[in-house]
Length: 398
Image (cartoon, rainbow, N blue to C red; front, side, top):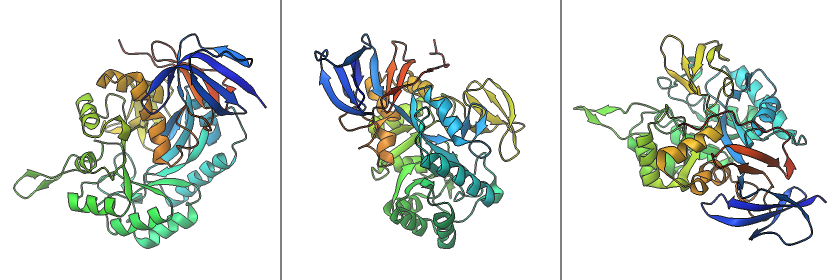
């Protein structure tokens, strides 16, 4: 049984607390967490006072490093992402033709079933942001492939894609929304809401039936108007006030959501409700420049953001998760040991995995990240095995 100690560390536990201490790793799991320096006889790896956190978890990965979850082996994306301290990832797709969705689900399920490779992030499953989107609010996705969340369509998803699917969006205001939410929640899927300008009562009806997450906050609609030009509440307003919406996804690249709105989310719900997500497509981790997305649309990446050529509309982020963590610290003033919760314990809890990952605590997987004083990833361990290559390219903004 492999057993060693990570000593002389500032432990960012993952729940907002921190302590100076050490971690005992036993056979891929955390065996003990103790204050102070280690005094026993096990092999010791000194971190020299560096911060040590749980491994990061990204809930929205459409691709990265020049690879796509539709066209390419998902395991190759996961292998690249591990080098940045992301030890677990959930794949994500928007609205695609049905056969393409089936192909993605098969790719993800293959990677999910094959967890023997210790050299890559764990693939947790698939987040279906489509097909149950409002057809006029699909964003960069293809509106032609949006489907109403009828019970027939829901059963088709559960039957043909369901094994891979861990999380699914149902846009409030689409026909059959609340019934679909209830059926999907009963089937054990985590249900989110995004891509909708539904009135508050329709949003609340979905929450009452099991919607527990808000997809990419403040990137869903511009806010509908009632008669007389009165502003109508959005998904975000409901989620900021209704704590049954347990987790709020946030693309924290500095472009998708203004820092003032990020601070508003923090003030209303606290860091305990935030899950930073990349919504990262195939250009994440790649140089700026033009590219063609899976659905044939021509896009370009610049300054960590992807846009559609011609319209200049946002088409997902290309900013890596460690940089989003740094941004959260910079935008809000949160201490790193508190901000780290938004990329570790919170996403784990959102999927019901908090007993396995997301926390430096006995019994959890020894997925760990060491950080330098500039909040750059320094070292990575997956199930107690050191990652041979660590590569945090993103620069800390001046």
